[in-house]
Image 1 (cartoon, rainbow, N blue to C red):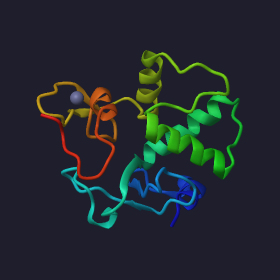
Image 2 (image 1 turned 90 degrees about the vertical axis):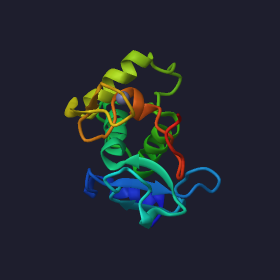
Image 3 (image 1 turned 30 degrees about the vertical axis):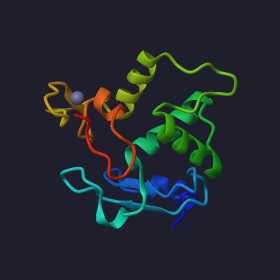
Image 4 (image 1 turned 60 degrees about the horizontal axis):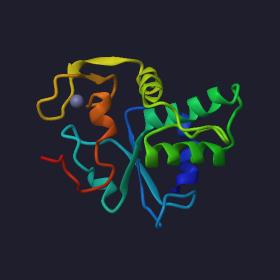
Length: 157
Ligand SMILES: [Zn+2]
């Protein structure tokens, strides 16, 4: 499976899964990808050894929805979906409209929280953090955003 395949059938993928893809050296349409569940302890799944963490399926769908929303509901092509997803994975923010300045971080935060459908019941899993985690994620917004995006990395001490 390639990143292009993932973008093409993104809407069919289970929200609880996570996308992993190989960089060559960047993520692109031809990058090899796997979509799998992550273990409860949030460690790197065995199916994804050799792949880098890209994004949760739910977040990738959110990136595509925001892309569409910012373009008056335009339906993205597969290549455009891929752009939105990879941009989000790289920069932790939505692909801006052409010529648009990057968004105010407070606005990005608000939209991200809306994409997650608000907060879950439990606390963020990051060390002593007392914030509530985002719905469907293991971390609060700050810690989700600052979470290392590569395989084999661990929380900073
Ligand atoms: Zn936190």
